[in-house]
Image (tube, rainbow, N blue to C red; front, side):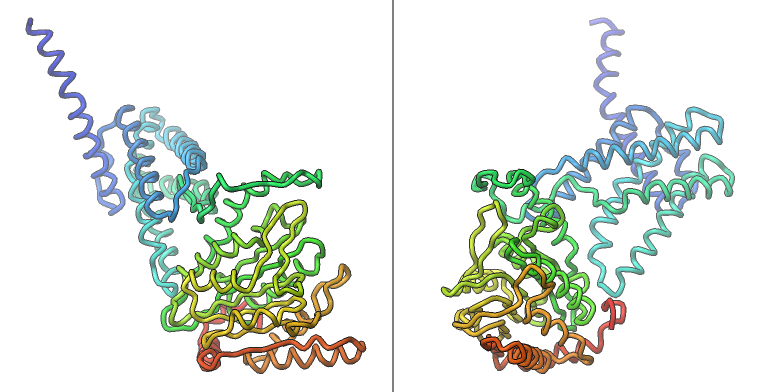
Length: 471
C-alpha cells in the first residue's frame, strides 16, 4: 500500500469522528446562545453537512420526546409538515439576514444557528413549561416568550452587529413563528385505546354521511377534546364536566348539552375541565360522537387528570330512555351501542372517579339510580323509574328537565342540593300547569357526597374570577 492510499483511508476513517466533534461543538454553541453568551456564532463549525446533522438531531429529539410524552402513541405524519413549515420560516428569516449583511454565506450560518438551539427550545417547551403549577403557568409562558425573543435578538445580533436591525429580524422571526403556536409539534397522538381491527360501519343510508370517515375521525376529534382538559388544582375541589347528547334524531339533545356545557363553565367554574360528546349531523365533523366507547375513554382520561380525593366529575346525559332502563344511543346511519346503568358504573369505577354527580335527562331515568348509587354520588334524574319526562321535541331547545336545571344554575351563591330541589319544583309546577302526568324527578345524595358538596361550594368562592365565563 502506497503512502497516498494510506492517507486517503485515514482521512475517510477520521471524517465521521470529525463531523461528530463539530456537531457537539455546534450544540454547545447553541447552549451558549440560549444563555446569551458572546461569540457563540464565531465558535460554530459552518458546513452543509453540519446543517443536515443538526436537522436530524432536531427531528430525532422531537420523535423520541413526543413519543415518551404521549400515552398509547400512534404515529402522526403531521409532525413532518410542521418541521417543513418551520424550515421554510427559518429560510425566509435567514434570507432577510443575508440581504442585510450582503453576505450569502450568512444564510447557511443563520440556518445552523437556528437548528443548534431548536432541540433545546423543544425540550423546554414540551417538558418543563407544561408541568408548571396552574398559578404559575401563564407567567411561565410569558417569561418563556420573552426569553425566546431575547435569544432570537442575540442570535441575529451576532451576524448583523446592529441592534436595531437585530431587533427587527427578531420581531419578524417571532411573528412568523407565532403561526405555528396553535399546533403542538409531535409525531404522535394518543390512541385512547381505539382498536382499528374491531371497527365496523353500517350500510350507507344517508348519502351525505361518509360512515367510514366518521369512525376514523374519532381519533382526532377525541384527541382534540381531551387534550384541552386541565388537571385539578391542588388544595381545591375542582369540577370536571362531560356532556353526553345521545340521540341525533332531535336537535333538542344537542342544544341541551351545549347550553348546559356553557352554564357549567360560566357558573360552576368548569372552564378548561369540560367536554361535549354529541350525536348530531351538524356537529359530526366538529365534536366526538356520544358513543359508549368515547364515554369510557373520556372518563378514563379524566380519571388521570383529577385529584381523586378532591375533585368531582359531573356527568350529564340526555336522550331517549327506555322502559328497561337504558339510554338509547343513536346516530343514524351509524350503529352504536345503547348505554346501561351498569356500563356507566363500570366506566366510572375503572377510571378511578370517586366523587360523582350524575344527571340523566331521559324518560324512565329513575331506574338508573339503584345501580349507580353509593355514598360518594349525587344522582339526579328527569323522571321516576316508570315515568316519562317531557320536552324532547324538535321545536324545543331544552327538555323541561334541562331548562329547569339550567335556570337553577343562575343561583348565586350556588348550592347544589338546594338548586336541584328548586329545579324539581319548577318542573312539577310546569307539568301541573300543562296538566301533564307528573314525571317525578328523582334525587339521590350519598351521605359523604352531601358533605363533599359543601366543600365544593366553599371552594367555588375561592376560585379566581377568570375561571368563570360570567356570573
